[in-house]
Image 1 (spheres, rainbow, N blue to C red):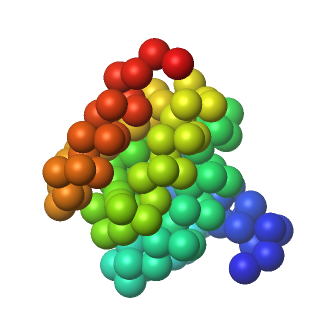
Image 2: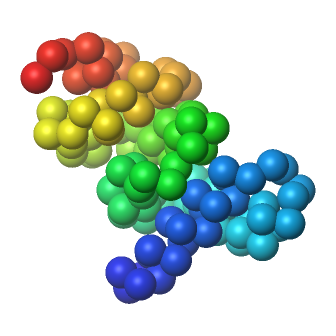
Length: 127
């Protein structure tokens, strides 16, 4: 996927998640929501990580979209492939307070105990 394609997905996903369900804005952008959901369903964690890094700091993301973002793509990434991605998540949380804040919306789901503990440590550590 090119950077342009990824940015189009990010912008459409945010626009859709910022909108009321089934509103015209939601319907116009639901293709991107479905694409990200497909990556989760297919456990395509490399695509999820690219999406997360490209999307997390966008100013347009409402609190509603941020909650879906944390409990959706970030949580799915760590539940499906946490051991492979936890270091990247910890590093980004250490570098960026906004990403660290987003981790507060992640639930354990089916993460391993080690990944969950490391996530909690990253989230609560004052850098």
